[in-house]
Amino acid sequence: MPAQPARYSPAATDTVVHDLPTIRFDGQPIDIRLSLRRTEDGVWRGRILFGAEGTEAERSSAEIFCAGTEQDLWQSVRDLRDHHLRDLYRSLL
Image 1 (cartoon, rainbow, N blue to C red):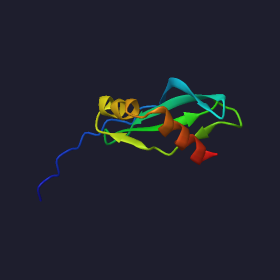
Image 2: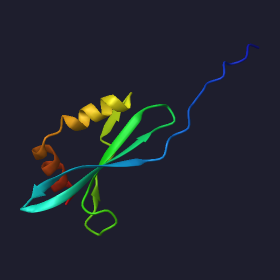
Image 3: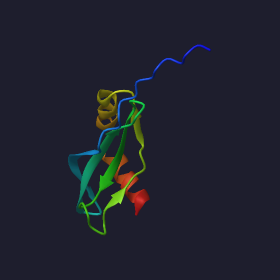
């Protein structure tokens, strides 16, 4: 019986949070952060965090970003405009 080749699977990295420029919603500034992690299969995933960290007002999207490289994921984030972020925040209220 032939042996199966060994598969290398790098361990998932810890989540890293990056601050993004704030947006205004109903005249109020809303803090925005991007939470990134690399999964065991090497895929980069990210979610948007809205509001002050650790407060009752903090909201989080699902992992709506997914890319093969960190650079590709950041390009997806850069392509978002303020109105997209406001609509996403509104959907989480």
